[in-house]
Image (cartoon, rainbow, N blue to C red; front, top):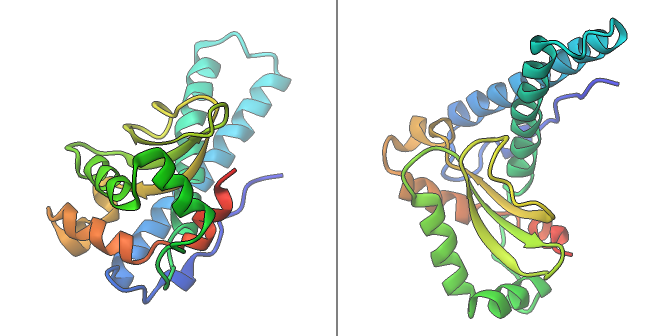
Length: 192
């Protein structure tokens, strides 16, 4: 069963994100869905034809990580946007953040610092499934840098396509807009 593109058009009109930016971003996401399906189809055919020991098969298997994670990370990113309310200050996520970072303010400062780092990639808050600790990570590429054994709690796209149409080189302004639109209910539901 092929993957299908999810509809995130409800985000159009979200403050700080132009319709042009969002539609371009949705098109980019659609490309990851399409390419994930294409790569999986070709790999399936190669398996049937017993061409699994070939360099072509190996390279497509490597490419699958890029396309699949590009698809899934964008879905998680769009899902954790569109919120109109701040974080529940008495909720379990706020308590967990304070436990692991000392305070919500300290966590936010750290997360924004990760998102402001030079380079392209993702700022992500993960929960270590063994220790339950929340940790902010920089993910350089879709298919590399994800911490093993962790659950993604919050993801912010900091590739240029996520902000340059609206903000040019002012990444900090994009990060502020992102924070104004976090869907904390969705983010809280991801917490174990």
